[in-house]
Length: 111
Image 1 (cartoon, helix red, strand yellow):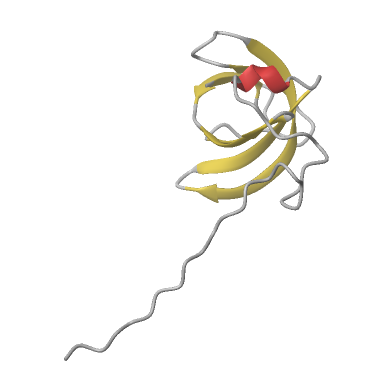
Image 2: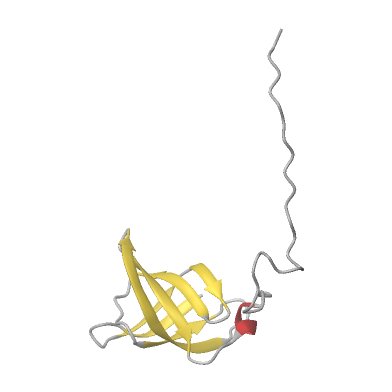
């Protein structure tokens, strides 16, 4: 994906990066550009070329010169990622949730 906008010093930047996490409301990405909380950026999905305006809602730790940055879409766009998300009221106890079955195994001593 490509992120563009103004950095903390007011200079235009464009940076290609990967997502750490996505949801219907935005993404968590790693950016080397220093941005400010509340700043407006543009996110471009490289596969679809779709662009979405977003704002910085989280500034996290820096790893190898890149900061974790939480971006939230200005308008909710669940279809932006082209994946299906569970409904907002979903929980593991929901009747449609799949349950995992666990089988117990016993270790038998070697003879």
